[in-house]
Image 1 (cartoon, rainbow, N blue to C red):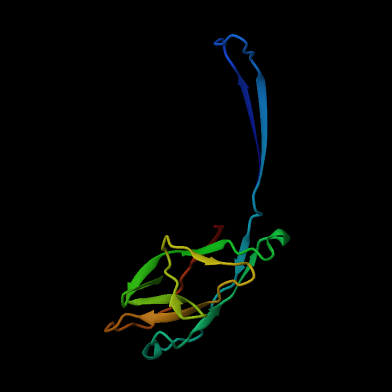
Image 2 (image 1 turned 90 degrees about the vertical axis):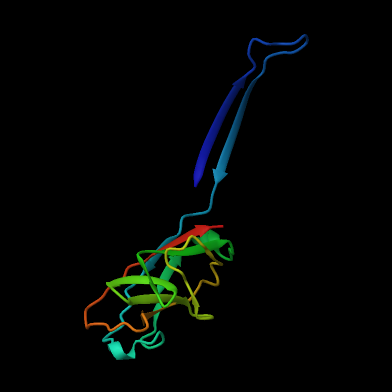
Length: 161
C-alpha cells in the first residue's frame, strides 16, 4: 500500500515575546507489503459411502496457491483464517455441508490438528513454510445419514501479522 499524508500547521495569533509563527509541512509515505492472492481448486471426495465415514476415510489434500509477490520471499509474518458456514460435529466446529450431522473437517496435515472454520483465531506461518491443509468428511456419532449430494465452501483469509 502506498499512501501519503500532508499536514500543514500554522501557529495562531497567540505568540510569545521572541517567538515567531512558523509554517511546517510534514510529508509521510507509507509503504506497506504487497497484497496476496489466494487461488485454490475444488476438493473432490469421489463417491463417499456413508458407512465408511469415520473422520479418516476419504481424506483429501486442500490445494491452494498463495502469491504475495517477489518482495515477500522469506517473510515469516503471515497469518491465515478459514471462514464459512459451520456445524458442530462430535464437539468440533467443521465446515457445514447443508446435511444435518455431516460436515467437512479441515486440518493441518503436519499434526492433524483442527483448523476451526469461522474462528477469530489466526494460524501464523511464513511464505516459505505454508500450512498443508487436508479435508475429511465427518459425521455426528449416532446419526443415520441418507444418501445425498453435498457441497461446502470456505474462504481463506491471509493477512500480515
